[in-house]
Amino acid sequence: MTRIVEPRPGYQALSVYRTEARAVEIDLSDNTNLFGSAPSAVASLAQWAAADPARYPTLVTEDLRLALGGWIGVAPDQVVGGCGSNDVLDSTMRALGQPGATLAYTSPTFVMTPHFAAANSLRPVPVETLPNGDPDVDALLATGAPLIYVATPNNPSGRAASQAAILRLLDRASGVVILDEAYTEYTGGTWAREAVARGNVVVTRTFSKAWGLAGLRLGYGIGAANLMAEVEKARGPYKVNAVAERAATAAVRHDQAWLDQLVATTRTMRDSVVRRLADLGFDAGGSDANFIPIRVRDARDAAARLAARGVGVRAFSAAPVVGDVLRVTIGPEPMMSRLLDAIADVPR
Ligand SMILES: *Cc1c(COP(=O)(O)O)cnc(C)c1O
Image (cartoon, rainbow, N blue to C red; front, side, top):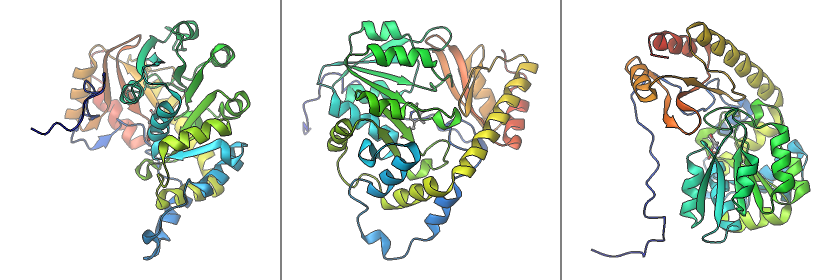
């Protein structure tokens, strides 16, 4: 057997990310935008000429950074693009963490966070969220970690951290704070300009959720220009493909009204589904995002029952703080009706 590498500590124990592949008619499991994609992005895909794929994309997403800078109100060099925000998170950890350093993160949260930390030779340390869903800022700070990760809104709760909690974290953190804002379009707020002003904060955002462009794999980071330059080094050139960059740039330039409408539609549907679930005896409240956490007695069993009825959801079993929950993406009414029909006899 050929020995290719000497595995790094913590790396060998990681496993390849997989989702439970279920043949379902209605997939409510991954929080992508089930209402559709930004129309100018879709139109841009149709404009590709036969000769276009032969060329490299822009070196470091110059066009997109210009558009995003204008949209968010920061300079283009305070933005960094990546192949999904996964790539930006991964590159940020590699760029800013010394091997062996601690990365403290709220738990439960995005599963890839401790994975990328370990893959980059950091030591991921989970810190349970408070019962109300807010990050436990004092406990995060008490780890002394030079890197702290918080998702707001968080996943799987959907809850946005309180303004007071984030401000307290930013005021007291001595190292770098990563704020994952994958769902922030649904709340209307962002810490992006604060990140730039403070200089030790990286905000990560994505086109995979509200913009409806998960298939294009495009995310970005926002922070002080010197931090973004470090992340860029770790990420490397030409990482965002030309199709994605053109499509997303068109969306940012032209689809604000579409985005506003999408967010309003999603929130209205979310609140309606939470109410209808409450009528059935389920607690599914508290989300500020495009998905809801439905508390059930046994998440694995509940997800299997729903799958048998053609509805795919994500099960969290005995998760820290939240226990057993189904994470369910909000979509158009026909999908939500199917969910509500299928869940009716699942034990609460
Ligand atoms: C979905 C999600 C992302 C998005 O990752 P991409 O690589 O941009 O598709 C990032 N963070 C969280 C918490 C998410 O739920």
